Length: 302
Ligand code: PSU
Ligand code: MN
Image 1: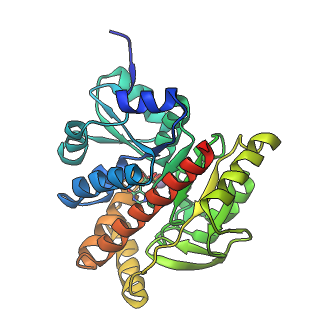
Image 2: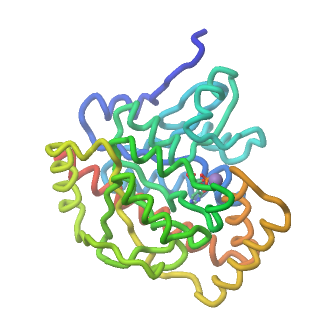
């Protein structure tokens, strides 16, 4: 056997070969971002939303050393339910595949593999970014540097309020990652529609975004990603959000949570402490981002 296998599903391979619209979807949100059993339901639902909007979904993950671009239902079940699914960022990809292990892919790793497969539109929940206290911990998600190097359009609901939003926006600027707000000039804070920071550019339709993507190619600014910030329609209760955030950050510090465990810890804390309210918002986010990403992919393919 090769040291790795790179396998687009038949459905994804056919769509790519005929220039049909394809949307990449990440898998860390399934394995490490959402609790069972809703993680599997959401993963399936998101795929059917992409299809209903006229595009082919390509959920990306590594299973038993195989790089899968588009998963069968059986593989989706494995990612959602198996206990041996690691969380892989870009730097982990070769190590996981060469050793025959399994992993869900973060935004960084998913975007990397999507572009390798020829997919340039990607839907996720929220991006990773600069963590609070990063001036001491140096905790900045590899999502940012990965996106500074990839020709991909990522639809997300901004970055979570668990991060240092201002610092993340500064890093996006430095890394030449494009940013547009979908029907808004307020940078969304994932669970919240407005993080308190402003976006310079507002776009109002998928067609408009497709025009921007074409201009990016012409001007060669497509070396870096474009982020489409799409706020959730109904945000979490703000007071409750702020209380939970505070206890989550304190809990992470007290329990010595570091590295790749930080984001899943805080997400899980939110879901438990809000008794499912944050989960509901999280699910709405990923559904609406997938629909918009599919519309953009369709508009680009026209
Ligand atoms: N946002 C979510 N749910 C998630 C994540 C982000 O709403 O599960 C995941 C994504 O896969 C993202 C990763 O790429 O967290 C960032 O992890 P870190 O902060 O360790 O780079
Ligand atoms: Mn980190």
